[in-house]
Every structure is written in C-alpha cells, then in structure tokens.
Image (cartoon, rainbow, N blue to C red; front, side, top):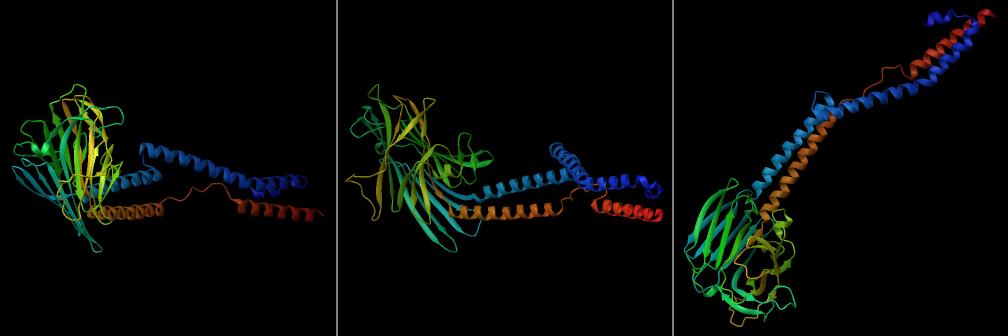
Length: 412
C-alpha cells in the first residue's frame, strides 16, 4: 500500500497528507468506540448468561459465585440451628415435672432447670434457674411464676382490662384439685417434643407445657430449646353474669432485676411475633416470662390486655430473704367466652448460644471474603480492540510525509 502511494504524482501529495492526518485524528475515537461496542456486547452476553446459566466465562463465574454463596448460607444456617441444640433430662411425677437442659455444643457451661408443680391446695408454679460459665464470667439467676386465680369481672368502662373492684366472682386456682400430669413424647417438624398436661379435676383450668432440644416449627409458633412454651386454657367457666369477662392474676418472684417490655426476647431474635415480656436477670445472665398479646376465644383472636407490673401487697405472702414479688393481670377482651387459649413462655437468653452464633458469623464472613477475593483474581481481562492503535497511525503518517518530502526535493 505504501509503495503504491509513493508512485503518486506530486500534485496529489497534499491530498495524501490530509488523508493521513485525518486517519491520525480519527484513530483514538475509532478505538474507543470499538472497545465500547465490544464491551457493551460482552456485558449483554454476560447478563444473558447469568439469567440462562449458559457457558460463557463470565456467566460461569457469576453462577459459580451464587452457588458457592448459597452453599455458605445453607451451612451457616445449619450451624446456627445447631448452636441452639440442648440435651434434656426429664423426670415426671404425678404432681410435678423436673427438666434439666444443657447446651450440647461449645466449651462453655450453660444450663437451666425448670420445675413445674401442680399440687392440690397450691397455685400452679413454674420455677426456672439458669447458670452460665465462660472463661471470663460466671453468672446465674432464678425466678418463679405462679397463676393464682381467674377473675370474673364486669368492665365499668373507666379503663381497659380488669381494675380492682370490678370483680363479681373469683375462681381460686390454688384451692382446686388436680389430675395427675400426663406426659407425651411426640415428633413435630422432625424434632422430639415433650408435652406435659396438667388439668384441674373440674376441667376449668389447664396448663400444657411444651419443650424440645431443637428449634421446632409447631405450625402456629416456633419452639426454641431456650424456652418452655405454655398453653393456658380456660373451658366452661362458671360465669355468674351474662356480660362479664375473665382475667388471670399472675405473680412473679425473683431476686434479680425485672423490667416490663413491649417486645419479647424471642420476638427480637425472630422466633415470635406480637409478644411482650417481663425481662429478668442481670448484666451477665438474663431470662424472661413472656406472653402472646392475643388469645384464641371460641375460635377467634381477642386482645390480651396487660396491667403494669406492680409490687405485691399481700400481707400473708412468705417471701425468701432478698426476693421481691410482683403482680400482673392478664384480661381477655371478650364477653362470656367458653373456650380461651393463651400462650405464655418462660425461658433464658443463653450466653452459650449467643457466643456460638457470634463465632459462626465470623467464620462465614471470613469464608465469603476469601471466596470473593479468589473469584476476583480469576476474572478475565477486558476485551482489546482489533483496530491499529495511535502509535501505528503516527508512524505511518510520519513515514508517508517523509517520502513525500524526498520526492519534492528530487523534483527541484
């Protein structure tokens, strides 16, 4: 091509110079445009590959990245579930249940004991003791929950829920007789669940306890190994009025600090919804008595109206030294219901579980960062334009101009 150009007449030399200068000036734009076109096409192909999982290099990298992260998610979730696993030791007598629960995994000591008593002439009572021990701390706490009475009241309209003075009849739970506790072991959601049923002989008041060593989906609720779920049931209450409602009086005794909260510990952790609680414990060990904010009354949801936690003023109460006793009322906002089912819980915020979850999150964060860095180092380089670059056109133009200048000199 260059040799043929050199044979052109001198009068065409200006045209030759203009052509090469034009090519020189246009070269950067051609190269950039071509690179942009190819990059756009590649990006489109990559996008298509991600959606259709075809075989281009970038598509394979993206799909591989997603699959690897999916595997991390699955493994991480399984290890987190395992961090809650507990070993249960259970002893059942006709009027009481004793449960020991120990964390299965990890080097830390983490255990709690629950004793439920349904003795004739006594209020049904649940006592929970928790202790935890790590390399840096050792802590424990204890609390008790009693269900004392069912109050039939007529709402006078001044405030929501039962108010002192509105009662028309009181059913003393502690003065009734109890049937023997029934223990059932069943499998739900692949997990072994222990169910204990205590019922008064007249059938009016029933407490059903449920506990498992694994996280279990009960269908309408999630059962965690860190808590004991209760179903409180009232059936065929002997009403004395046609426009009355019912409330349960409960008592909480503990040596530790307690605080009423609008959201439960397990709701915060994603294992519950529309729950409130009494948070009990200290800076190193915590537990809770929580409850559903709705109950099922004759097949329909009704609001459970909760009073403030107030210190008990019962002069006959025999408290151990250092303990405080607080009272609450749970009112069911429905008139003359024949069947009420309500779900409280008692449980702990396991320090062993919390430490295990932190370690698992750190482990998988490190694995994901390592995988991302490895994939980035294997990514293909950007495509290179096939057109000659700036340097080629510069050399060619200079060579042509040099040849033209020589021919001019020879003519002269």
